[in-house]
Structure formats: C-alpha cells, structure tokens
Amino acid sequence: MKKLVVLAVLILTSVSMFSQITSKGKPDVLKSFRMGVCKLVDTNGEITIEALTRETQRYTMIVHLGTPEEAAVTLASLAEYKPCKGETVNLNNPSNNEAYYQNLGGTWVITEKLTEIFSISVTRGELRKMVEALNN
Image (tube, rainbow, N blue to C red; front, side, top):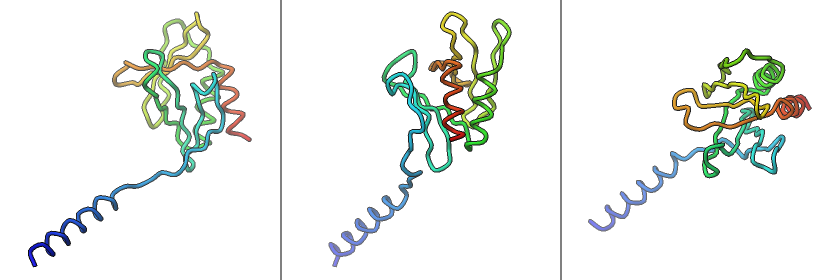
C-alpha cells in the first residue's frame, strides 16, 4: 500500500510540473538581415528584433517592439530621426532599450538600458526594410 501511495504522489508531481510549461507559439521570421544574424520576428502578434550581439557571437539580444503597429512607428521614427552628436534616444518599448547613432559605421546601436553590456547595430536601410516588411 505504501508503494502505491508513493507511486501516485510521484505521478501527480510529474503531471503538475509539466502543466506549468507554456508556449508563446512558433516564431515567424518576417525579414532576415546579414545572413541571418539579425531577424525581425513575429510571435503571435508580438514583434521583436533578434540579433547576435556585437560583443560576443554567443548571445542573442532580443528587442521587444510590441504590436506590429507600435513596432512600425518605433522603427520608422528611428530610421528617419537625425540625432545630435552624442545623443541617446529612449525607444520607449516593452524591453526598455536605448539607442545612439554611430557615425563611423552609419548604424544605430541599440543597448539594454539597465546593463548596457550587450548591444546590437542596425542600419537605417535595415530599419526601413523592417517597416516595409511589417506593412506587407
């Protein structure tokens, strides 16, 4: 009887552990840049930019942009904005990122606001193509 109770407890415990796993759905790559290093991804209506960081090629930084409409507005405004020298722009997105324009490479460097350890770079042309992919 004792073995039966222990077996029942183990089965219930394993079932309850698996019931806590959830899925956001299969990600759909809308547009890919630089041979797959930078991707615009749609996961059930949540738009993100996933790219390998500039500091290490082993970490993928994810920039959450919100709904497709919010993402299109953020990306279009970043593509057209002409910053002053040394100006940092807050993206006002769900993942709370900041960006600054790097003249040497002609790219926007997007960083994590809290740590600023990892960053990705995106050109104005890539931003325009992302907006075009969102509108189609």
